[in-house]
Image (cartoon, rainbow, N blue to C red; front, side, top):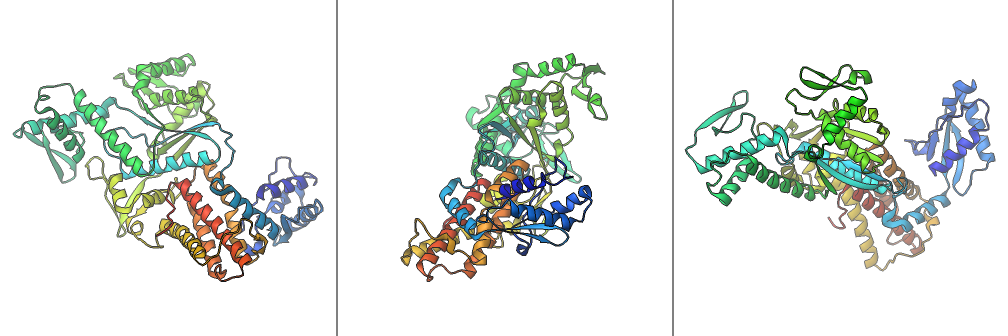
Length: 564
């Protein structure tokens, strides 16, 4: 309907002298239902071009729309209100047809072919295998996975990819940490030392333990596993490789298991180290050098980003010969283009906000179409209990793991709470609310609505009220019935907007509006006990509401229980 009215508006505006050729009228759902089903302030926007009062312009537009004419089976009325708003009301017969279409589409309702099967890649999580996934990783994981779902729903062929590095300093420190714990098991009399982890806080560790080592209990568990497998055979092994490889294997298994608990399964794991092995890293440096954007200074290799709009130049290779994060990231993104992806989405935490623009600058210099790359930056998470923040610190190994969070509040609640705020806002994860097993909990409110509809349909079946294959949906003229249909018809538009903006919280917010509209409908419109034609029509409306709730929850990766 929105597209139909927008096209009619554009058609009329082309006939009015003085309207700019590139003017695009915008239609929105009014907050107040009394103002119609869709409204536009186009007349007020055009007043400065046409040099006439907005209401006069609105009256002219309305008159020309009526003369087209707008299909009365779809649009019941066009009204001018206030200083120059144009309000549109849907025809009841049109709403009946919309409801029939929803029921016919079933589980596919909300899907579209905007993406036309084009290949898209969403990179998310991408945590190096140095420890268990934390709550911070959780927001990344759920956000990225839901964005991938949304792109799939609008017709893209989506690849979910996890990018990681099992080489470099972090992994070396991981191996050294495991080796130190292993040696302490081999020799209980091994000397120890204390490492300060915070002001006034010290941790006792074996003497070989690196100063910046990993202190979590999982390191001790991995060391114990090695001791059980090899005894003291690794006592004199100076090479940390067996310790590092054992840790990587165990940690990655743990990461995959944690993601699977949230219904997250990757299509591909891309190892940064392959970019060194195949020379892609150094190909980037030489390609940028040929373009005149590389120079050497103080033993380091610099990228001349000051010539590309940045305040200063950027180091790509340190004087030690070790690349900075930007260089392999550039090479990695080139592989995404080489693999033919037409939409490239990166999900990063706020700590990447200063680095990713350099990657895009390099790609553009090298001739790649950076308009295909979208970077979603999300803000960090604070766990709150009793109104107070729960302390998290990876360095001190007192962080809250994602598994611990799931254990406390459950998979569905974890996913929903990570999704119910815009990615670009800081998220306070209220553990008390998350544990609330009632309709106060926003995800339970939606699931209760779905389960309630299932219960209604079971009850209808028990009393002999069967669903009709062709119910008379034109009987649904009650205000609450029509309000619910109008809410349900918005679902495809909400999915498309959420996918295009990478904002899954739009779907979460919308589903609450559906649940509220259904509750009002059910409170005001009995199903069982009404004349059979009306009861069957209302039962069909309830089934459509269940469909939308189930489809929306599926997009969010959340279950839609039939009983609660």
